[in-house]
Amino acid sequence: IVVSGGNGSLFLDGEGDADTAPRLLGALGVSADRLILEDKSRNTYENAVFSRKLVEPKPGETWLLVTSAFHMPRAKALFDKAGFATIPWPVDYRTSGKEGVGFYRDNPVDSVQATTIAVREWIGLFAYRLSGKIDQFFPGPGG
Image (cartoon, rainbow, N blue to C red; front, side, top):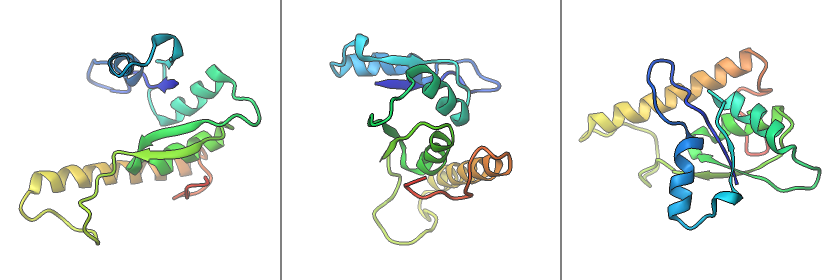
């Protein structure tokens, strides 16, 4: 299991995914010797590049890319561009189960949070496309 993610915060100190995941996975019964930790990356682009360099995936190997569903298009595109073939495994869906897009009229805080997440992902896709780090503005599941 590769866990990729250092502290990507510009202003705050804290732990990245590679710091916190071993505790969670250990509590779930995953042995520490099964973990490969990449703790230097500060963003999704570096997650992809550093993880590929760390594990040097071989042709024919199957790697799952597990991340939040809202983040999967950007992550998948970056891993593909880095030459790290993965199968997307989106988790943490943030839907209410209702069709359509809209705001929570009874809970404006959730509306702001959902909008913030969406805007951040769209800005990330736009910036990575403009910088040539991904090939499509909104990549599909296959990259």
